[in-house]
Length: 272
Image (tube, rainbow, N blue to C red; front, side, top):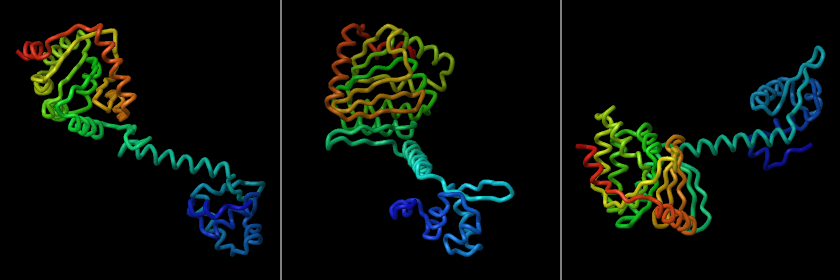
């Protein structure tokens, strides 16, 4: 069995190592490898250590002797796939995973507050003076406050005010009671963040607590949607006009059954 030139380049295998692997697709002793490859015993011993360490060769005790056998091509494929999966996970943690389906459309997975917050601020800056739609249960807000600092939370909220975004938002009906409870329990931790929720240009309504009772929230901009799960520290950024319009229409349908509230008045009463 032969290894292709492309494969040995990808695997970083040198010529002498290629000879040893190909010779040991059937179990071989060191003397047999010397005879079949023409490499000295010293050279064989050295290269076997390297190949054993890389996982390309297995050392098996056979009676009183040791034999060496190369892993199969299927096993080599599995090793390569594991390496690819490892790279993908590393890429996910550092830069997010981006899938661009066309010039206008792309899907990005952001992991961790260090990616999610800048992504939100970037989208907000591109949607100045526009109306955006949001659904947030207090469970999602609570998870958010556990994952980021008050300074980051203020920046998150200020991005809405700074970009003069009109917020069309739905909260669960017990959200304000939950905010009040959190302020009473830990005023130093929450007061600054909750104060930054004031003075938004906003159209708020609420829905019964049993609906949207999740650790996730959704922000629908003109052409982009951001779905965030703060418990898992993951956000999906969808830039796709068709999907965003679909979600926007769904939001409007749900809002018809919600109750209009005066957000800024309630926030002032809470802080007073």
